[in-house]
Amino acid sequence: MNAEEIKELIMELSRTVGISGSEDEAAAAVSGYLERYTSQIWRDRLGNLIAFKGGQNDGAEPFSLALVAHLDEIGAMVTRIEEGGALRFTGVGGIDPRILPGQPVQVHGKTVLKGVIGAKAPHLLTVKERREELKFEDLFIDLGLSREQAEMQVRIGDLVSFDAPPVAMVAGNSLAGKSLDNRAGVAALVICAAELAAVCHRANLYFVASVQEEVGLRGAITAAYGLVPDLAVAIDVTHGEAPGLAPPDVFELGGGPVISVGPNYHPALTRRLEEVASADRFAVQREADPASPGTDAWVIQVSREGIPCALLSIPLRYMHTTVEMLNLDDLTNTGRLLASFARSLDRPFVEGLACF
Image (cartoon, rainbow, N blue to C red; front, side, top):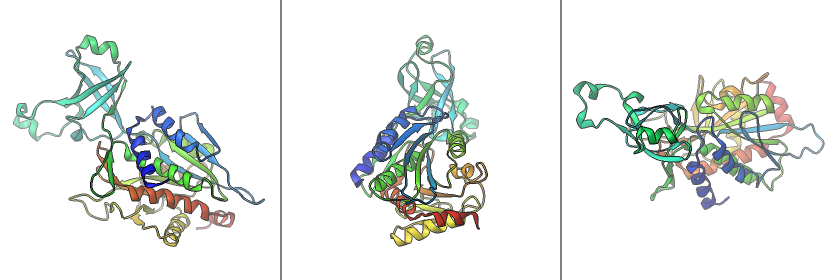
């Protein structure tokens, strides 16, 4: 894929809606890309999108590699319809209420309804209220409808997505938008699949766009259990540099993908990723991760009898907002590094993973 195709890919994936537990629209968009480069594609019982491409083993015992990136995004859910027609709501996934006032949204009722998130005007807040932390109870969605009109189109439990089209920044090589956590990782899967489309590799490859990560890593749990790959790499995002933040908590946009090191990750896999990056001259960064990363890698590692796992992350500013920002070179190089890593694997390497 060339630079313009990759840019269009991530913008399309950012635009699509796929709140945790309702990922069909996003899955359809990704499927349209992956089916070009793989031989088989399906949804499992939980809704994970899985694409398969067989390897060439020349008679040797086959082995499998799963590349896993979560498909879902954060959003909201309607909890009550007020007397005046305003909708009360709660978050689906981790949302900071501070980012919400003034946000345009789409309420997925009988039809898709445009709305805005409102709150009491700052001029009307008491001194005490100004000192208090903003809570979901302070917010509402305004559809411009009466209660009777709203009740005809909206039900308790209807989902709410952010109405935030992606923006290609004029300067530099960055792009901002909603749901880049983790459509960026899913885009990296597509880039990897495109790189390997006409290339020989020994591993049987599973490209997995997992569901419900933002509400408990659920898709990765069932996908890892069902596929039982010999090894896996999870692809996600990590915190990008921004004013007021400094290493080791954040990573440079444009500095390359981030390889995590810690007990969640098999040392041979992290070492191989770094060796491949060095050989192919991909700039990479390193993240020390001594505890739970909160990514799909956490549950893949302990599925069944244990699956050797690594984590590759894309630096992302303003995580869990509607203006998440990444560098397109980091995205491209993540996909290409994954492809080089997949090509480097052979049966002796996989057999050696049992030995630490």
